[in-house]
Image (cartoon, rainbow, N blue to C red; front, top):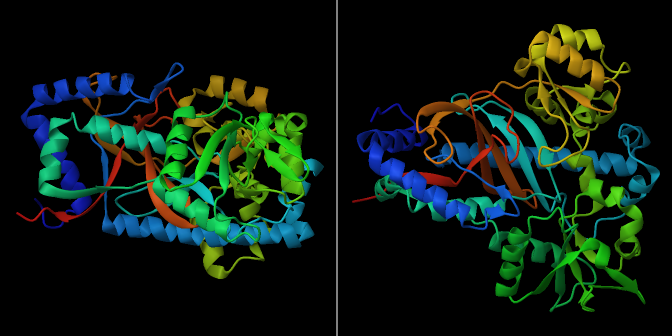
Length: 453
């Protein structure tokens, strides 16, 4: 191996060398992985999470950069939340309803900023530069993908050979979250020694099998836990109860704020309980300030920037793409039409690629004009397009079994402001990653060294 090659790239070349040396065995391995995945919890209610053949391996230098990104971002997000709470000018920057404003201003029942988040970034492995794609907070999901895909990877002969030569270590995202959650709960003023925890969501939107793994992790830690539809909760005599009649002491909120506000009248018991401070919940509604894609606009606004340090402002300038509402108040339609390759359109507040995600460079001029004319002034956001980083990979299971460039988008899981793991998503060639369509997820490992012989 080239001595100037990073350990990260050295491991990738080790995979590629073994695949090229025995393509038929690896093709068989890829098909075996496909069969495993199709019969696993990654195939649920008609939705199948797919992968490509080579996992993602990051070296310690890259992981150190990711930790710094999480820590710097968390500090900035803390400034946003405190600014919203204390500064009317910052509060005015966010386009929230009066009902949501009241929820956001409720005091968080724990010590910390963001209990859980995933920071999706476009990261250039050659330079270390990156741009944010988006931030997910309470609905942060997909931890189960990494766990199940690692099991499928045991059927991959190239991987079995590489892990003999290199010390590959995975992240653990379930027990570590339970530890983080319970630490937050114990920081609350009314915590109990034997709490009953509820994982709550609108269950038709839930990644239910993932919830079951989280519930099992709570139980393994000696914490009683159940999964509840948020609409089924009952509030009486100052306590919140599950549909089964169990008193709930702590809530792991997976119901995203947009869904709660869309079903506001159906979740009155939950709203009343958190407003009264009758139940612990993570996370508090202040996390919506970070979840909304409008955050990127706010971070560049003078009323927010005056609350940031020079280092934080430099970080925002370098890594947060310019974002505005796609309307006449913020940007001209002609500007976006004339520079189509520079822009991408997204919904203001959505998840799992819901709504329209459209990059100008994926359209010819006429179709881009038709789309922009239709969406202009409808509440979409217009964002600076970020250059993608591509690496080769091969897909024997759902692809053609040939090498292709894939865009890379690592999602940095942050538990209470600390890097906890990585969701690695890819898509063939330079196209937008769309969940459950062209999206491919790969398991992630860290590598510190070669295995000593």
